[in-house]
Length: 512
Image 1 (tube, rainbow, N blue to C red):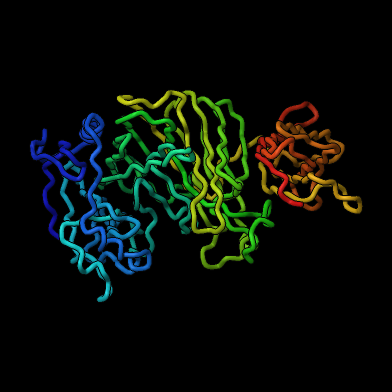
Image 2 (image 1 turned 180 degrees about the horizontal axis):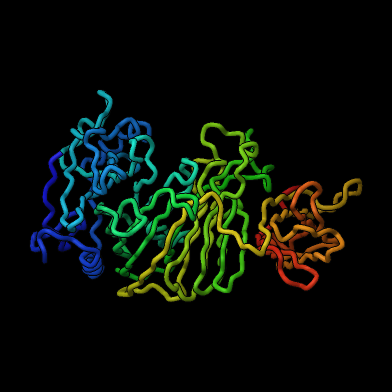
């Protein structure tokens, strides 16, 4: 494929078009991208026009995945170690994205769109798509051209296949007004620049231009494959954000996942599989050093939880249950789905980790979102800068001194053999970790269980689980009204020092 020299970097009326009066006609830097995004924020938003929308709508999900980028057209911006292939547009990815290749001298070339670089069935509606349309995104293949390990496709979404080669949850560039009573805004990456790795340990470097009605942004991604410390891939993100208008809720470093049901609430679903979810909990390592675990729910209505913090050490949507027997799905392998851990690399100040849970009745809908909301309000003309790593891991980083939650189960309250109390459920939480070594029922382990909008009923049981290195906390609870009970629980030793992470949940009496 012949590549056209990119000589334009000055913003015009649309991010997909650039003026030719470039400050430097051969080079393009992250500083140039920041200037471009900032200039864009000072202008009214111009929605991207989709050429031939009726035709693009015919390229359904199934039709889209039959169209493949030709292997001999593969791009190698970072050498043989990071082959790049491009995605065709379709019904769910209709807006054209510009792709540029940047070399080690910062010179940039445009990749022109053409049907000639794709293989497609003879009866594909894509044959009628006009020339000069635009790509939908890109993916980076492994050196042997077998599976891809990271992809950028749709709005500002991107994801990796994680440590076990199985795609699951996604990350986004930004979240705008998620889970509110107004329509959510989905800014999009309208242009990508792909080039050789700039920093040690990276496989390839990517720069992206974000644009939306309320915001623009300049992003740099350092993409690293198979990092030994994280036991998975790492995406290093630098984001410079420019507010085009006021935003009520600005979600930074958002993660999007799916949770239908697990062992905790399996009675809510009628599928034959024991559990179905891409993630089963939100983990937080607070700025003060506390470790928090919040098991996910599939609520009856949209639910929002905020965890106020300052300079968080990390948070993520995690798939802790990695036992195939608990899913029994040998097609999509939920037990292999990656976890994603957001690790700030600069100070984020005051704000909150926010969790949005949306009702779902099947596994096809991503209904879980987690992100950071800065305390500072996002107003027109404001600028924000955030740097962080996304570690695509099997599990979240663990404390060396605290046991972690490994199971959460919910069932009928009361005592077996006695009448079942009305409006009461039981919660059972299992903790596991080296801290329990050598401890028994005489070691003085005590439970701390607190609740609001409800009541924790005595007795509260805590005891070692026979044949394991786990301790179990069990208690009954009831609601004060129709709203969930906010529960916080952990274990302490005989000196009243915490020996487990803190389990938190919005629990409802659902099993009757």
